[in-house]
Amino acid sequence: MLKTKKLVGVAMTLVATLTLSLSSSLFSTLEVKAVDQVTSSETTVVEDTHSNMPLISRSVPAFSSTSGASNANDNNYGTTWYGTAPGWLAYDLSNVPVEQREKIVLSWYNSDTYDYDSSILNTSSYHKPKSYTIEGNSASGGNSAPASGWVVLQTVTNNNYHSREHVLDFSGYNWIRINITDSIPGSISINMDIHNAKQGTDDAWIILGDSITAGGTALNGNGKGTIAQIVNSYNPNHYPLVECGGTGSILSRHLVQNIKSYLSIFPGKYVGVAFGTNDSWGNQTGADNYYNNIEYAVKEILAAGKVPIVSKIPWARLNNVSDNVPAYNAKVEAIYSAYPQVIKGPDFWTIFKENQTLISGDNVHPSTEGYNRMREAWAETILNVYKNSTVVIKKGDVNNDGKVNAIDLAILKKHLLSGGLTGDALKASDMNNDSVVNAIDLALLKKILLSQA
Image (cartoon, rainbow, N blue to C red):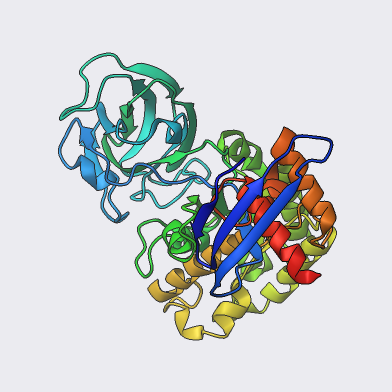
């Protein structure tokens, strides 16, 4: 027999006297006495089912071959760790709970290099890692990085990109290090984040595009912060990993030429496609060819098991662009219709046409405030993805048939004897939201049914 237990909750205080008899009937007696009804409790719970990748490296002890290591993992992506190659940057993760760092994603960002892929048009790179290893160390935490015992987990040579992600099995390690043996042009400037990837990498994003995309997704922007920081400010359960994949002066045909390479190194789920200003400038691509190029990229993204997000081309004050963009954006709409798996990205045409002061003096590129607005728009898109991943769980509706009745009570009784409930059914059974399903929840469900009689 369970002893009488006084429950003090948000909604009510109960005394529950429960007698369990494991005879032919599941429970022979069940008495619930409400002694102080205050308010009616929450009967539904809205739950975000989208997996997250919590940031676990913010302000952990950082060490490097030069000074300024803490600039790499502070809250300001406008500050970076500067070093010279060969050089290294290490974090002590020993105080991060072990279960939060068994599988991780290391991401580094070189904001001094504007273009994501400098190899397309042979553009300049500044302080960008070229060849490096990612290493782990099992030494205990301390006031300095270990001098020995480093184990190479991944190796990269001849890197062309200004940011990268590395998924790592980190079991048994306390320290993480990027050891850079070569950089362009010999110096190094990076930020480095570590995310918990226990739930996978579905909260990793990359947004590919042209120079406007580069400016509108850059990490060293001002305003409300980076895209990830804006998302986190509205939804603290998420701190997404977002790479800026913009490269200046390129067209949609360059995406066709490089999309497979980009997908081969990107471990995340969502791929933004934000091209079109250069294509429409003077109508040099043609709307039909633009559609074919975007469609090709969408098909490749889907074939890789990832989700494409396609945005509208921005309005521009320059007629040689804006006169042509509507025909191109009509092709974006056609992509939405032909491929329902595509997520609609920001409508930059409407955003900038309705807020024309956000365009800079060159009449095409956004101003600083315009780029800030672009970051906010991408954050809104990500937040909408989370919103569409939520489920509503009705407390007591154990079998999810939209009703709370004796059938649910019988299922819960059976679970308390022999188990079997999982997932949303288990959450629906947790009547008092204490993360434990037990006889107290059974009593609360019985009380609801009695009140309905």
